[in-house]
Length: 161
Image 1 (cartoon, rainbow, N blue to C red):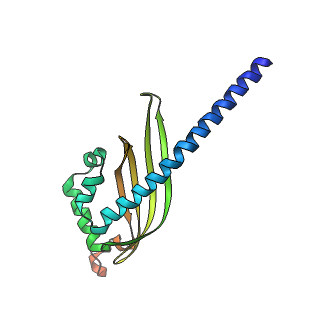
Image 2: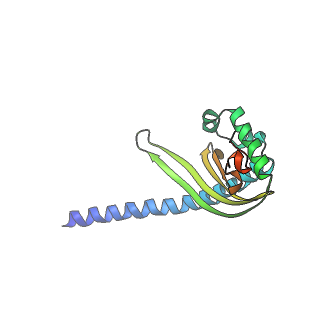
Image 3: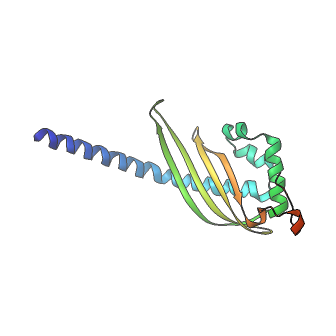
C-alpha cells in the first residue's frame, strides 16, 4: 500500500513538474514567436519581395521550394492582393516537440494572422521553427477570395503561377 502511495506521489510530482516547466518555458516562447510571426508577415507581404524570405527563411523552406517558384508566387500575390496594409487578429502558439528516437527537443510555432491588403482582405498563416535561439520562417500560406481562380470565360484570370 505504501509503495502505491509513493508511486502515485512520484507520478503526480512528475506531472506537476512537467506542467510547470511547460508553463514557464511556453509563455515566453509564445510571446517571442508571436512577435516574430507579425514582423515576418509585415516584411514578406509588405512588398512581396524575396529578400524578406531570404532574411527570415529556414533552410528547410529553401529545400522545399526553389527561389524561382517562390518569386513567381510573390509576384502573383503582389498582383492579386497588393501590399499589406495592416494586420488584425493573431491566433496560434508555439509547440515543444520531443523526439524520443534522437532525444532532441524541437520548437515550432503556428500563427494565423488576419490581413488587410491594398486590394482586399485575407489571412496569412505563418509556420516558424526555432533554430540556434532564433525564429525562422518554415512556411507561409496566404488566403484571400482575391486568389480564387476564375475561368477566363467569366472574365476572371486563369491560373496560378
